[in-house]
Length: 519
Image 1: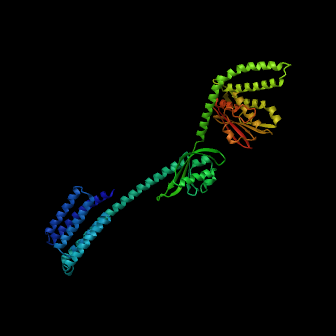
Image 2: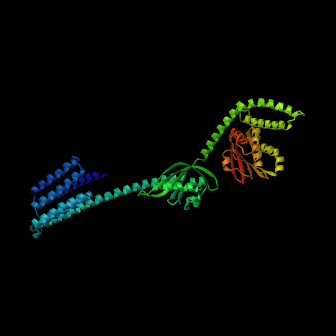
Image 3: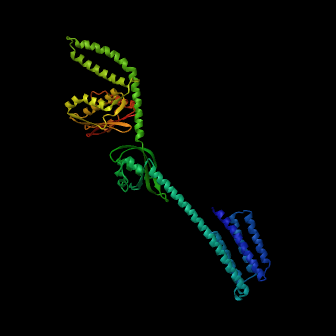
């Protein structure tokens, strides 16, 4: 309810109250046989008040009309019928004005009442105070009754206001509880990691998603500085200072590590939290894990690379192989000549031709379409065949292969020769990563939907900058490598609707995980 509506309601209430007071005044006048023209003036003033209310005049203007009319009636009453009862009725005007709960009307009423009281005290002192009579007693009783009635109405009205305020407060409490429940539900059930920090960087709240993504529990994080759970100290401090200066940072790509060194790609949003005085009291941090999104993008880029290489292989490889066969044939004839003075060079040329032929053969694996035949094969058979191929080389290099398979009868629908090529590449890379010997753990496990094969060595490890490039065409760190082995392996696994991932730590070793669907 706005102020004007409140005043309008008070105007209506006072008009009814004054009508009651006027009726009592007439009754008293008739009782003491003093009914005269004063009553007609009161009736005219009452008519004026109702006219303003019925015509819906400005509520504030109507309020002042009521106040002036009330004091006008009291003035006329004291002027024509001076006595102490009527004299104290002037104070009743101030009491009535307090119903508006506004300072200016009360000051206005007080000024009028004070002036009238002083005026009638000076001019009618003897009539008002020197000679009390029965009439005076009646008017004192009348004043007391009016004051009592007024305060009864005031008490009723105040109680209604209190009940209304209490009801409004209850509604606001329910709304606040609902808002808090909505916030709590959002905070707890959000898939994004959410942190609340104080201005010093201490964690004061965190949700379950943060523990799921970063690995830190509530007890390990809350109450500690954020530097405990993040690693990019300088970059983090710079972001916090920007937020404390009032800036809001939205969807900023940020690479970080979880509790156990897990690499996390996230988009973070940092916002300042203000109090009523617009002073920053806290910082909210929302981190959206986009690691899966990044992996999907990487796979898409890799698929595009494979597609390009495949198209190039299909269009070029066969055309290169034809003249290469001719050159190789003539070089073999030259090399077989006992009188050939360039025996060393012809042998070198043949070796390089073999190398070129190997690259072309790998290219042809990438060419599309390929005639493949998927059959149900025991994965244990494929892996044991590959291990057998490397047995002699492992003995020479002092490498042990430790093979574990929880279910050796597991069947996989696949192209067996292609999967053999994948595991040959993986074991070959592991052996070459341990020039002084070591152990390769080859572990095969299965779930209801997937088959997992892990090839783990304790070799030199791969720097993170190199891991990102593994699988790119012709990228290799080996002197005699083609840079196509891992690319071909990834394509074969993709054709089998699986995934190939690599994790590595320098000087600790590398783990390659192959996931293949069983259905």
